[in-house]
Image (cartoon, rainbow, N blue to C red):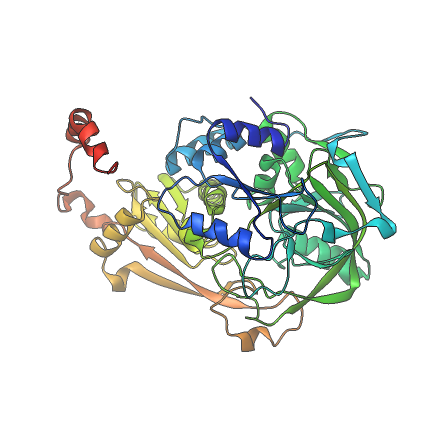
Length: 494
């Protein structure tokens, strides 16, 4: 069954036992802290949490955290087989689907649930929504952390949707933070601001989860709208309404949408904000100047849901599995596009590092230098990639225990490690000293970092005579598990 919006998706997740409700939590730190404590639990699958009856806000106004905290919810969102719960199984199913997927552009409609309530002009009041402060050292509340920023390239008409954080400034202003290397940064800086023009913008919250996945998906190429990509995933067009003030396509089934203008001539202090790598990585606890969005209209459904994603230490972040899936597919696709054979698996360990600071590629070694070719190409993909490890096809790249095992047993350090200098990075990189960042007042900032490639494969010239591995055979493992599975399961039930 295909969902049409967030609410239908939540009904499906609820029937699967993956939605929890909590009443009475405060928007200031309390909600995000509850979610972080839940994320620290050892269970791999984490529920969606919906906060109701939030003190100080209108009854019925809700917040939601943890959209993609399970492989089942990702599979459901992407229309993949729901019985495949392993990471690599999920990735392989996604790769099979996206390779044969046709883009479907959005469908303009005259009305939709988003128009249930419309505030314009002096009636605009963003303070009515239960906007959280996520971390104790954050400089404010963040209206946009699990959302889509909608822009149009004025030259080509291409519509981009990206997740660029948005801080609440006052009743009708937001601060917009977009990194320079992202599509949205190119549109804002090159197509509007450098020409002395303000940028029409829509910030939509409570998106169809498939559309939010697309807005975070790094492999949607320049010129292809995330609306079209989402339509292709779902096999049906996303319904949109033309914005009154911007003419931008607004998701007709979103929970909340803010329409306005991002000013080229006005900056406001933004942050500090605890970021995806677990640090205040921009300028520490100093705010930075960012463009202001002047809000002209706010549209919202009855009993709206403000969707949230508070980034934290990556191992406690409930949406990093989504990033791992998207980034892994992007790296794998790029390797194949370069004509490199023998790629057996890719996994970006976003659940551990956030984004793509650590990625592992599994290969069948076919020629001398094969593993180094793979490492060099794979390492060029992420904006802030740090470590790329190449392993052989007997290793599941998503299993860090096995990766560390071969990393320490199959290669000599002086031969296995290669360091690349002057690679691109971004302003949130916590390894760049603040002194270096402060040389430049606003983005784009010419910052560089290094990257490491580690060849954890057996030496090509000796792999056929390599030492045997003392590992239980698949046949014996199946036999033991079949006979003793109840007793083994009981080990964990006490």
